[in-house]
Length: 239
Picture 1 (cartoon, rainbow, N blue to C red):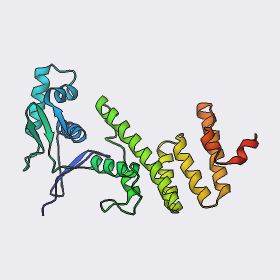
Picture 2 (picture 1 turned 180 degrees about the vertical axis):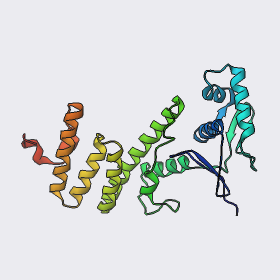
Picture 3 (picture 1 turned 90 degrees about the vertical axis):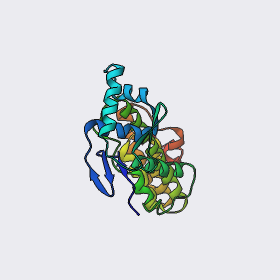
Picture 4 (picture 1 turned 30 degrees about the horizontal axis):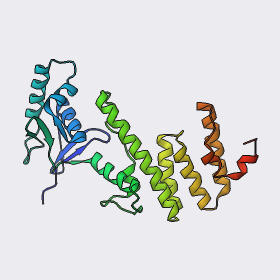
């Protein structure tokens, strides 16, 4: 069976047809990226978002040109449905795969070694959404994807710790910490995995490092939820 078309939005934007990369013009990339993230959009809204400084007539004309320049496929990558445009259900978008994996973890499905043939942890890490793109609609979607990833990594770390897979739990927790070092939930996940392994020294050391960082950057203390994980800290003013 022929390979389905694939749209890559995590990292450099790219389209593959039949497993081969296809070159897109700049507006073609923007059009496919927006549609790949939204799925279904009113033509007027789409034109106004992609060409906000143009008149409505000019923006709609630019949209028609961008649609005309897209590669011809069967079915079409984007089809018209009344006043809306709809992305082809045959198009595989990497952000959809990330979202599906992340939501599966957040809904409490037990962590498994593989999700759709790809390691769960690997599916939740990787490059950010459309790096270098600074349009408002991209910034909104990038933050959505970032938050989804962070919450899923935290939940994955917690689930793996419960299963006794502490080495993998630490990998998930550290992936979250690297993306946002001041995120307490991620740092709690690191400490939780160390405690589950019986490594009290490692847990205390990580807590101390995070506490210093939090003080230096924000001038605040960790929450009681975090400090309560290590009861020794409640009577140790030197920490």
